[in-house]
Length: 140
Image 1 (cartoon, helix red, strand yellow):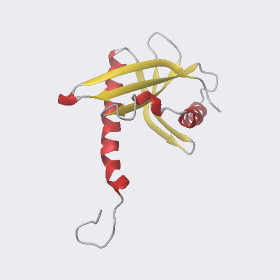
Image 2 (image 1 turned 90 degrees about the vertical axis):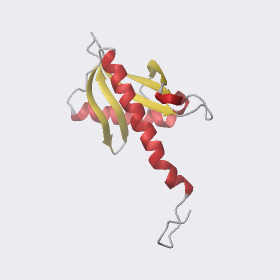
Image 3 (image 1 turned 120 degrees about the horizontal axis):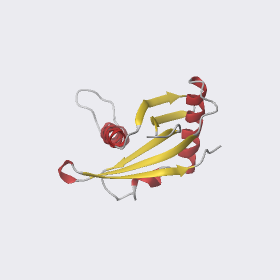
Image 4 (image 1 turned 120 degrees about the vertical axis):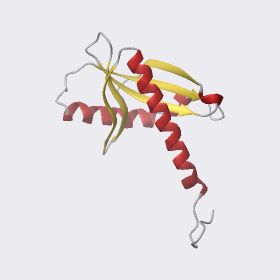
C-alpha cells in the first residue's frame, strides 16, 4: 500500500498491526477488570524482558500462589478460539519471562501457575470470556 505524499510502500501486515494491538490492549483491559472482580490482586501488567512478555502477573484470591496470565483476544473465530494461539513456542516464551520476573522480584521459591484468558469481542461492545486455570505447565 502506497503512503500518501511519499514513494514508500507499506506492507498490508504493518497496517494491520495497530488494529491488532488495539484488540490486544482492549482484551487485556477486559481481563484485568475480570480478574479484579474475581478477587485477584494485579501485581504487574505487560512485563517485558529478553525472553518474552507477561500480560498480567497476579495473586490469586485466598492463595499465596502467583498467577501468570496470558490474554488472547480475537474479533471473530475465523482462526479458531483465541486460546489456540498459546502454542508450545508461546508457552516457552511465557515460561522464560515468568522465571525472569520471579528472579527480579526475589521470589524464586514461590508457587506459581499459568492461566489463559480467552476473549472473543462481539458486536455492540459485548464480549465473551473464558478463564482457563492451570492452562499449561512451565515449559522449557
